[in-house]
Image (cartoon, rainbow, N blue to C red):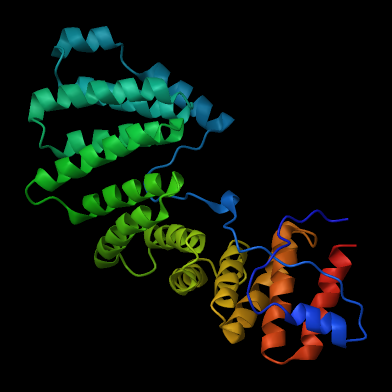
Length: 327
């Protein structure tokens, strides 16, 4: 039997399952879905540089490290506080991050910060950039409190720089929002995500990947808060951008059709929910397999939508599919 965790009440109007069971000759005996939970496997896809910890990347980092000039030779040539020393620690920090050694990366970025402050003062773009890098290392290391501190330092520094590119503020808001999101403070996370969104939409074209990733995070956060009106708006944005960037049949868009459909069911927009779930179903089935949790939920919510649209034949057909999956 398929093991499914989502067997409680998704929607207050789901008594129709009981009605179908009682009034139809078709023997439907099915449990109920729980409130939609975001699939954590889709989480966090931030727009700033990410580190992919693969064997290939590790080898690349190792080769790059062999090219670095010995630190002592650099110090003898330039002294302790020189842009070349800053560059050395910046490259070394990035390599440590690629190798998943975030503790050493953090030390390197702090040294780069200290020297940069000596050279340029605290109100400098490079100082702020290194606070962002240091924050990202803390974030990947799982130290959310330190990551938040570094991101706030970066934000404060950018705010004090005259003629600072506003996109830098957007990146900081984005990062701060991600920390709050990951510690479960979705409301505060959304406050920062919305600030980032306002800047990104002014600075980027409407189909920019950074805007796509931001709306994806916002959609998950709104789902967690059960604010399905806003989550549906976010997923609609994600779907539109993915359709432009990836095409309507790309496998990654299945997740977005699915999440949009689930949000629409929860807000009683059954017409558009069915439309979105019908698009999601074949892609999810192809990508995840017929007996995946997402496919199960997709079919059952199709049945919910079809019932409320009074398309009872299709509703029963969907429920037959569900019944076959749990045998």
